[in-house]
Length: 153
Image 1 (spheres, helix red, strand yellow):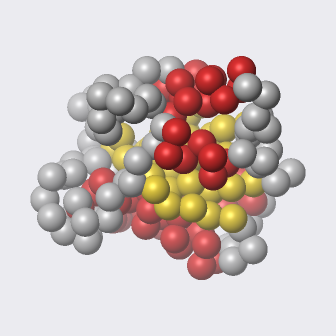
Image 2 (cartoon, rainbow, N blue to C red):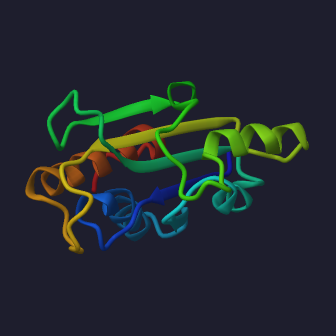
């Protein structure tokens, strides 16, 4: 099964970069795995995942229901709509995937989303807040174990 890891976020906006920080560390631990980083989703990323069977997407999330540092494993059906797009001329990643499916693109059949509840996505900083940074090793270990059958990090 051809797998790709996609880390989303902006690494200069504190916790917003958590998906990319995790993706980079997975790449360090598993150098043969395909990993991409993106600061925007939608059509900008769909081309990158064509030809893969499995997508592991890692991103920040702000639900206001849980404490920063809480992490979730979600399916695509839980993200059919998003709060915003990067521009009014863009579409979210899941709408882009649906559109590409209609054009018979070879898209991942399995999409797993790991989302980390964040605290601060507005402060200019290349570091995550303490609560978010503390769970990064746990999330990496979980992904390695669940998706790559790696028990050691």
